[in-house]
Length: 89
Image (cartoon, rainbow, N blue to C red; front, top):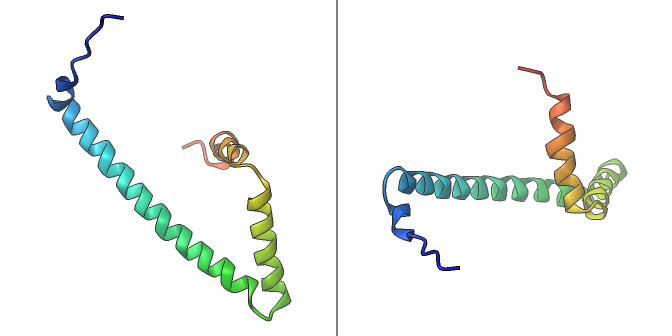
């Protein structure tokens, strides 16, 4: 394998703009998912310690369902099954 890849080409147009855009998109998605996770976690945690048996059971069911389903299965469901429920537009 005597191939020398020219890494400097990634700093030229249009590749540098693409990489910068992808980096900013990744940071935005990470921050957005962190905020959503904190909100959902706080709500579910508050439901699990409340005195209402209905809310406590809902919080427990939510935690147990997501704790017991492997992440890969959830990713397959979101990627392949969830779009079937969306409109064709």
